[in-house]
Amino acid sequence: MNISICGIDCDICKYKDEQNCKGCRSNKGSMFWGECDLYKCCISKKLEHCGQCKDFPCAMLREWSSSENPERIDNLRKLIQNA
Image 1 (cartoon, rainbow, N blue to C red):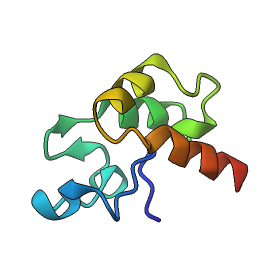
Image 2 (image 1 turned 60 degrees about the vertical axis):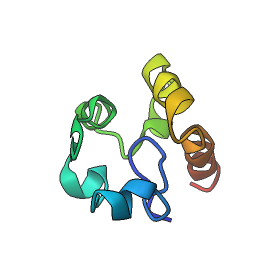
Image 3 (image 1 turned 30 degrees about the vertical axis):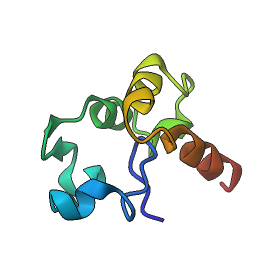
Image 4 (image 1 turned 90 degrees about the horizontal axis):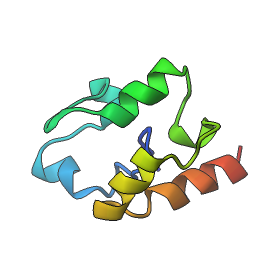
């Protein structure tokens, strides 16, 4: 799996093909739709992904998960468990 900062599996994300998206890590948070606040937050805290944050899952991550890619929090929980 190619997991984004916020837990999206980039390998199966519809935007990989639709928008030729390489994911936030490759794009350094500069996405086809604009700057990613989740990416900026995580990088500013020097974390590998949101699952490492003491506030996980924060309000912003929960809000983003409620609209699109709801599996992202579960993906991050799996990363934490497998660490």
